[in-house]
Image (cartoon, rainbow, N blue to C red; front, side, top):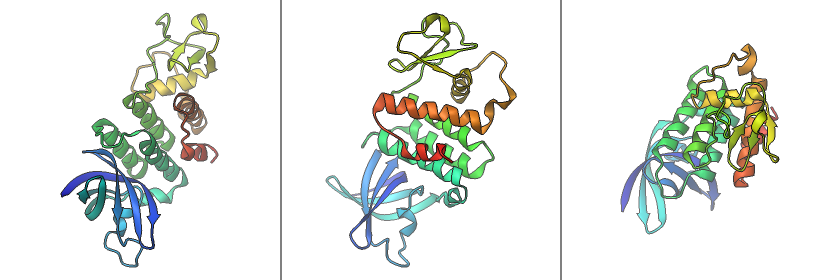
Length: 244
C-alpha cells in the first residue's frame, strides 16, 4: 500500500551501508518511522529527503508497521538554518522536542503548524531566535499536556507584579502572599516573557531590556528545568544552546 504524508524529518539514523531510518513527524499520522534506501550513495536522488529539517511530501510504501520512502517532493529544506549557530541549535530543539513529545501515529495539527512556523521564523525572519524558541516551547508544552498556568497567582488570582514563585507540581505561578513551601522563586521577568510568548497581556510596565538575549536565555533555562522536572526528559540541544 502506498500513502502520502506531509512531514518533517526530525531524526535520521544510518542503517546498513547505504540506508537510513527516518523519524518523521507528519501532519496526517503524527510520528512515524520509515526506511529510506540508498541515500548514502553518491548522487542518490532522495538524499535531500534523508536530512533532518527536510519538510516534504513523502510517498511511503507500507506493509504492516514497516514503511519505506519511495518518493518525496520537498517544500522546504531549511538548509540555511545551518549558517547560524544559534538558529541551528534552536531548530535542533524543535526537532528534539517533536521526537520526544509528539505521539506515534497520532496526528497533532497544532503542534505540526507551530513547529513549521518556528523553523520558518528561525530561517526567514529577523525575529529574535531565543524568543521564537520560547514561543515554540510555551505553546507546544500546552499542546502536549504540560501547560504552564499564567493567569496570575493560582491561589488569589491577582496579577504577579514584583516577585514570582513557581509550583512545579501544578505548573502554576504564585504571588509572595500565596507562596507554598515547595515553590521556587522565579524572576518576574521570566514570568512576563512566558506570558508574552503565549500572547497573554501583561499590564505592568516592563523594562526595555526584557527582550535581550540575557533575559530570554534565562527564561529558556526555566523551560529546560520545567521540562526535566515534569517529564524526566532533557532537551540536550537546549542545554547546548544555553552554553553559547
